[in-house]
Length: 302
Ligand SMILES: [Zn+2]
Image (tube, helix red, strand yellow):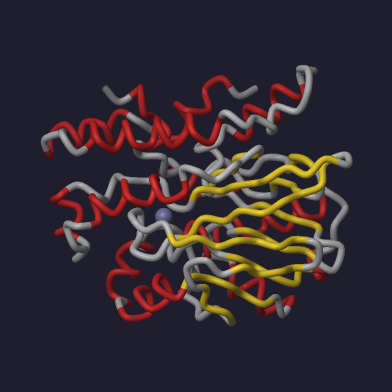
């Protein structure tokens, strides 16, 4: 049961990896055009060289801060050139480093208004979600609170921000055009894909409305018609980024990150997995989480 949808299972780092966060650090890599991966095995962080400064799309939990800085440096960039940070949603594995980065670089921060207000109005829940995930995972107040459909320009990047609630009530997805060797390709990143907390019991536990189960599917339908040539995840295991990079290092033909069929394949997998998850008893859901873990997904990574 679990293996089929492993990427949507319990993908938290192991206890040892939480104690020694550098164990999930890996080298950064180029994706295409001006787009790079600088996150770790658990938390995605994408860097775009906009020509007028660096943009980060999500940052790791605070425990991943040193690894993030080293990865930016390894690509030959200077973290002092960081100008903007866009955060997909109000979970610490996407915003944990933000206040530390802002303190040293003055980068301007962006997150959806719905999630920002929900996070700041529920400090106790935020604390519970952050428990055990390392030091200073501080909530933050973004400089810009994004609304559904906002279009924001950062240097040579013009990004469309779409509200796709479900994983949180205000998670956003992002889309933009990118020049790759003279060709215009569209990059898309689906916001929150994890549905582990959306069981009826889970929603009750975290004080969320039951309607989130319906909203989760409506959000998938909302962005279905987006044309996406390069799909990213806000966790690297959603879009198999390390495996694509491995393929390229092993000398495959073409760029494995460019795959216009992946968007619909992924959204279908997400919806199917979620609908199956809703049929589980609490025991079966518990079993699914006990059976899946981060390193099982990465077992074929060299
Ligand atoms: Zn999340």
